[in-house]
Length: 202
Ligand code: ATP
Ligand code: MG
Image 1 (spheres, helix red, strand yellow):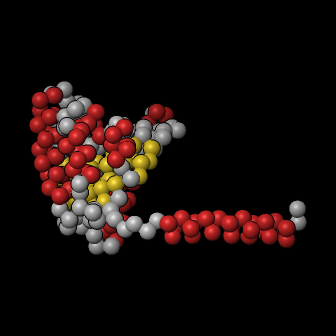
Image 2 (cartoon, protein in one colour; image 1 turned 30 degrees about the horizontal axis):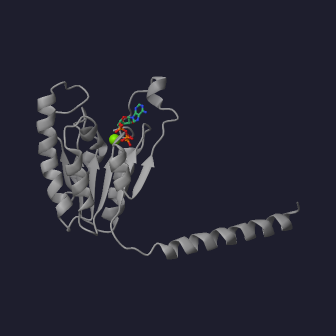
Image 3 (tube, helix red, strand yellow; image 1 turned 90 degrees about the vertical axis):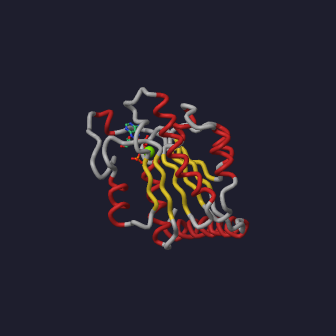
């Protein structure tokens, strides 16, 4: 095929694609907040959520971030938000659930205390974006009742968006959420013996 023919074919295919995209854009005319679940066993769930935090902040939106896990180290996003974005309401589970704890009662108490901070945000229309980082584990271990969390997400203010991260989460959560993305591990540096990297992994 000569270049002229190739170009003509490319142009025709792009025009077709554009028509499809335009008609999809026209069909999506509902204006409201969205609920997003980022799940799967690959790297990129929490960092994607923090990418959306940045997007929201770019438009001056009000953001709440609740982390349902206590990391051994402070994560870079936590340090940055605390130091540079005092307007973001950031809460990390204080004590309790880490991969090291085996104290179920203590974990449940910590989960409940953390949920007590998250819940009012899901009732408050002044929040444009609420991130519930790693909350899926609270469901998996039954530290928090599934119905309570699903009900709060479902009944949040119309203009509020919510991002949930964590592996699993269950089919009811997947059904409820507007957007569900699964990050699939192809490989991870850790398996090749590379240490978790400051500023990249945490
Ligand atoms: P990130 O915060 O980097 O976006 P994540 O939220 O998708 O990761 P989590 O399951 O919350 O993943 O794990 C957090 C930490 O574990 C990060 O340091 C991440 O790099 C690391 N991690 C994520 N997936 C894997 C994996 N498949 N194997 C090893 N380590 C992983
Ligand atoms: Mg994560």
